[in-house]
Image (cartoon, rainbow, N blue to C red; front, side, top):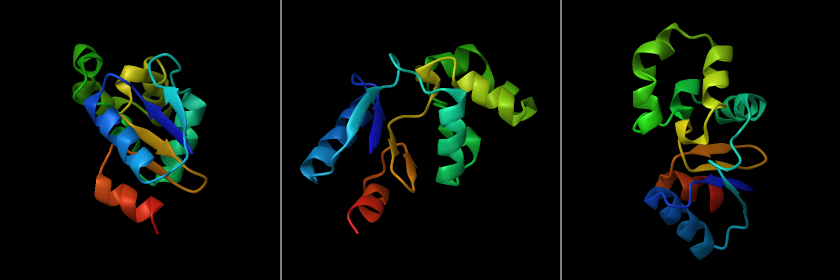
Length: 117
């Protein structure tokens, strides 16, 4: 599994600790240093079944600076993907990508249901 994280983020640290505690093998990727591409995000969003808007870090500084709350409703899918691909800090984190699923954000109950069947 691929685990996209921003190491200083407390939620990402809790998610990493959860994975380690539960013996879940993963490959880590620093979301700011190695930003997801528009193509990756497109595949992950479709695999997740979630709306693309759920992939935006709405509490982040860049989201607010770019006034994306007002702009997103007028953007098409390609524009949203391009915007997300500009900066890893715009992407909701952590992301956990498996063969047949994508988990966005860290919700222990959701992770347990998906990973500890």
